[in-house]
Image (tube, rainbow, N blue to C red; front, top):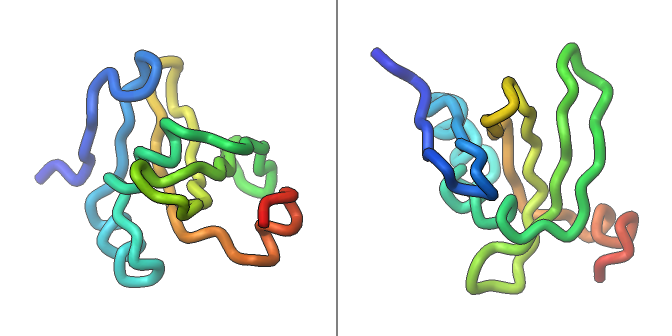
Length: 102
């Protein structure tokens, strides 16, 4: 059984993928699907490296399409053509202040 969902050529030529089981856990914990997280990656406001893991990860803050809501999406680049979404959640007020976003 294939656990990976892949959307081809979605963001500037990048494929975007994620683990379906991880997405279900994310929905339960944060009420955000990775399909919604795609729009935050398409409309980024800030991107920073997250070096606290065994792999280089990125934290992207972006707008949800058709909304003023902001998401924080954690992702990595497993290869030159792919973005892999790890988690996504609404941006907290404290994080908004940290990034200068009210």
